[in-house]
Each structure stands twice: as structure tokens, then as C-alpha cells.
Length: 369
Length: 245
Image (cartoon, rainbow over all chains, first blue to last red; front, side, top):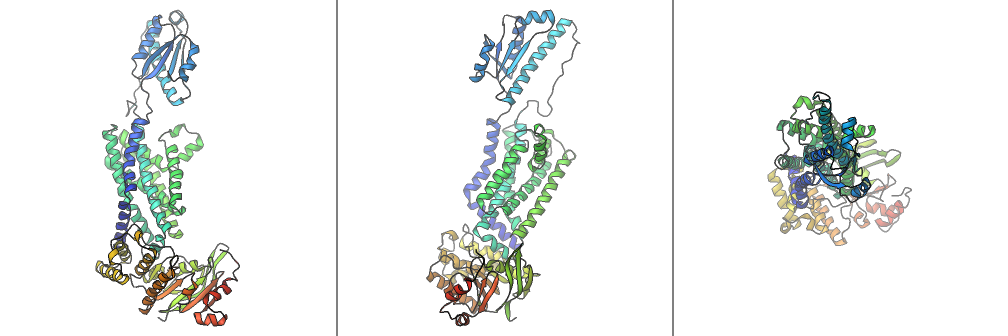
């Protein structure tokens, strides 16, 4: 125990003396939260809608007003001809164009069918899809009213009423807060631990530790302990920021959330250990954790791209990313307020991964060194 | 216990490569044993086995009276080790380094305090007690490293090219420390590239291609090979090496 304490003291000294790294590690979560919170937004606000059509036509007029009154959409400009559409998109002057057919109103009255075309800017497919959906929604609701008026029955057809549970405002912060949490904890634990172990390999001090009677497992634990504390601080920072700056609720149990976080810290830690076994220089440890861990985590864990939309092989790969399971659990606990029974599957998967990684890395650590 | 180290038919293979090929030797208690060989001759591998860091493929022996295969943990308690690379923590202060290794070897606070005083006064380094090790000259670092390797009064101390990169005067003073240690009954097992240092040893073994080609006192070796100094002896033997670095 005394030997272990001597070690832990030393590790804390290393970290506390390296002020620059310490600063980065503590400030990184704040910067990331602000970046994701304000710079990277996926919701649509004030999309600019251009219109081609006869505004003197009352039916057209009505729809246009309705679009303008929608809080996500703004009528931008009335174009005299469809030929102008490409240049509007190229100048980035509009996000979507709605074209009404000639004699839209009279046609509609006569045949009950009006032709409308919605043209989105496909060079940005994600937001184009969302904007087009909004516009379609507005037109459809107008359409049901008109057809009801025409047939004289209010019961004809049906309009679904849509409610997005847990996140009615569709705030993207509900998605990225769990993501950033996963990312930060991953970086701190795996990158920092692996670098601090590899540094000792590089400087030759690791040999000294290994010929000493201290067991390798204690060396590992003492390396990990300071970063466990740093991660705790980060975890608290992120929670505070998300609650009070982003307004993301913590609906589930804080204790459960912390428990899940601790499990994930262990996962990241064992990954860091594995990296430190493979890498022989600090640079390669950084590269390995940066490219080999961060990139797949960012791309495949569902932080940015939803896993459900990936091709089969990538979906299969994404199952191997520990952060994915952590993020799912955090979402369930924070946003849905789910209790342990609802996350038992994800929890067991992550726990299994952790146990496997930890066993392999501790074993290898002993053999390698 | 007459012999500090007894090794019989020690072999270590990595796949098809035989790094250490059936070596046997004994080191008497209190002697300075020079373990020489060109790079790649298998010195480091052999030394790692003796320190309990690696398990031999076949053969065995004892270090400080403990079996190298079955009791490596006990060996670790009774040996000191200083590696070729300078190995103290540069971002820790001098006293913190001493304290750390005292703690690692399970010394009590009182023992650590008194050992710290002894080491610092012995090396004349009281003034740099609070300096970061990083700021010390290489020669000082090596002496401090050696003293720290001896902090728990080990029976045997392993020195892996302890004097790399320093001038002859500093090396001479380093060897004074070694002599001082052996006068206290400690056995010293040292690898070196400097053949003048080999002359200081009581016994010298020369490894070539994983085997021990020669093992005797420097005087006897020089006589046997009709050489003027150890350098000539070494070159005669190491020249037979077939495998490269």
C-alpha cells in the first residue's frame, strides 16, 4: 500500500507540474460544448423560401402567407420565372423555392388538383431534406383544409398530429451533449493514460519500475487514478454546462448516470492501456489514440451521423465502438429519464467490452514489459 | 551463500532466433563482474532474465539465492538496477526521486529520511536537493541514479552501461562509487562498452552471438590471448561474431 501511495503521489506531481496539459484537459470540454452548442447546429431556423407563381391568385396567396407565418420559414422573394432558380441557389440567396403551376387556384377549384413543385438545394442534402419537409408540411395542412372545404365534409381525410416526445423543440443539443461527453472522456482517459505510460517507456523509467518489487497492476492503477479524477471534473463540467447553458434536462437518476460514466471511463482506460502497449513513442501513442480511436468514435458512434442510416457493414462496425453504447445510455438516462432496466442491454455490452479489453491489456502489459 | 549469481545452461529463444545460447557462469559475492559483448550479442536479454523481467526458454539458476524462474518477485526485492538510459524522473525534484524509490522499495518514512541525508551528503548534492533532476549535469544524474539504485541496500546491483556519454574523469569518479559499494559487500554486475572499465572488473565475461566465449579475470584473459589490454582481447573475440546488430 505504501508503495502504491508513493506511486500515486508521483503521478499527481507529473500532472500538476505540466500546467499546459492540465489547462487543455480542463478547458477542452468547455470549448467543445460551446463549439457544438453554438457553431454546429443542425436545426433549421428562418429558412429562406423563394416563390414562383401568381400572387394575385388567392389560393397561392393563402399558401404563401401560411409559409411566411411558419416560424421556421420566411418568404424571401417572388421570382418572375423558374429560370432564375439555379442562380438563386448559386448565390446562396435562397434555401428552397416553391413553384405554383399556372392557374393554380382555378385548376384547384375545377379539378380539385393543383400542381406545386418544391425545389430544394441538394448541395446540402441534410438541411435541404429538412426544409423541404417543413414546406411540404405547411402545404399539406393547407391542402386538407381546401379539400375539406370542397367536399363540404370536415371528416374527409385525416391529418396526423405530430408530437416529438422528450425533445419537442428538436434541439440538437439533446443529441450532442451525450456525444461530447463520450468524446471527452474517451480522449482524457485513453490518450492521456497511454501517453503517460509510453513516456516512461521512452525515458527508460519504466524499466526501473518493472525491476522493482511493485506489481505491474499497481503501476497501471496509479497511472489511471489521476485521470479518473480529471474525468470526474470534466463530467461535472459538462453536466453543469448542458443543464444551465444548453438547457438539456437530466431527467433520469444522476447516480445511474455517474455509474454509467464510471464504467465508460474504465473502458477508455483499458483502450489507453492497449495503445500504450502497442506504441513505443509518445508521438505514436498520440497518433494512435487520435486517428485510431477518436476518428472512428466521432464518425461511427452516432454523434454526427445516425448509425441507423449507415450501410450494413458500417453499422456492424459501429457496434464495436464503445462510445456508441455509452452515448445511447446517456441519452436514455438524461433525455428520456430511463431507469436501469431500460439500459441493461447497452450496459451489459459495454461492461463486457470493458472486461475483455481490461483483461487483454493487463495481461499484455505484463508480458510486454 | 558463496555465489551471488549462479547460472546454468541458460537459453532464451525468440521464435527461431536464439538470443542467449546455453550460457553458464557464476558470480562470487562481493565481486565486480563485467558482462561484455557487442551490441546484439545477447547481453541485455541475459540481464533481463537475471533481473526477473523475462523468463528463460530453458536452463535456470539463482540470483541472490533465489530461483530466477520460480522466485523473480523475491529477486526484485534484493537487487538494484540502473539502466543505460538515464532513468530518474526529470520533472521530479532530487529529493522527490529519492523518496519515490524509497517508497517503491517499501522503506519507512524514517529510513527514507535518513537515506536521503546519506545520499545527498555522500554525493555532495545537498544544495541541489530541491532542484529538478532535469537541470543536473549528466554525470551528477548518473551518480544519483546509482545511489538510488542502492537505496534499499540490495545484495546485487545491475548496471546496464551506466557511464554512457560522459567524459573519462566523470567515469572514473563513477567507478569510485562502485568500488565503495563493493567494499560494503555488494556484488556488482556491469555491462559496458568501455574496455578501460573492463580492466576495473574482478571477472569479465565476453558474449559473442549469444554464447559466452571467454570468462576469467582481466589479467588471465590478457595472458591467454597474448593481448596488451582488454580492448585487444575484446576485438579478437567479438571479431568472430557472425550475426550483425
